[in-house]
Image (cartoon, rainbow, N blue to C red; front, side, top):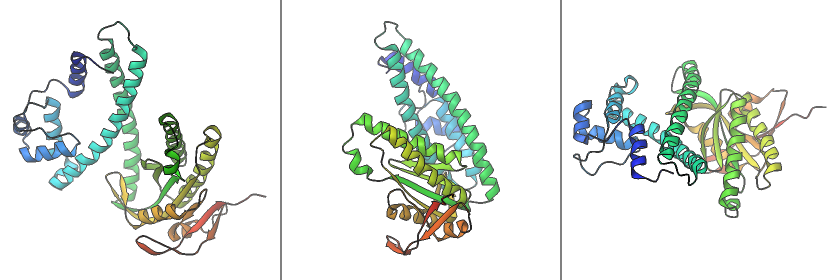
Length: 327
């Protein structure tokens, strides 16, 4: 880690685009954005507000960012609320990414340098790692943007039919109490790596990971069902290497969903989540909408279950989906 104040300042200025030289009042004047709106955008991005408008805490990059948000064509017409929402979504995603990257740099740089006698080498190594991560981040973002734009253009609107799925690890809460931090890290890494690889390999995309659960989407029920079944197989294989790896349970639902800032909303999402909660270990449950789409698929078998009552849904009809056994 970077211990000296001088080294920390060098790295900070490199990341922030120069020294802190402006107050919030000056940022408002230079960017042409009112002080209160600039403050809201700053907080929405995930940064703590300064104690007063006269505290020197901002750089030239901060001024440029506030100006960019205020003039962003995609949100400017919709007003302040959309700008704040866009800033909040971006800030949350970048904060999580930055936390991971900071942990990685701290471990790697500290491990390489140890207690070496070379002054300034830690700051240099950190700056080099940040530069490489920045290039990779730009590359990954551009590839993901291309794929997301393609899906968005094809749908033609904020609401579109999708297969939404949830998969979680059975008994994770109880299991996590008995694992040490290294074992828990290995378990979560294996879960996220395995599920992400399967989802993307079959044409789906990850919406988000929350602890022991992954939420994903696919354009078709066929792709979604195969993702779910393959995830179960892949997790079973991972369990041969990690004995603590629990089984999955998965819920899928198909229908119109609202896409908003990278997340999905609507009844279909709620149904998929509820199905996951009632699924037995090692099974994949689908709703009526997905079952209707899968009906007639020669490679899959559906078994209809009795309706169950869950929170928010009085009668939830579900169907178990399995691969047809080949003779």
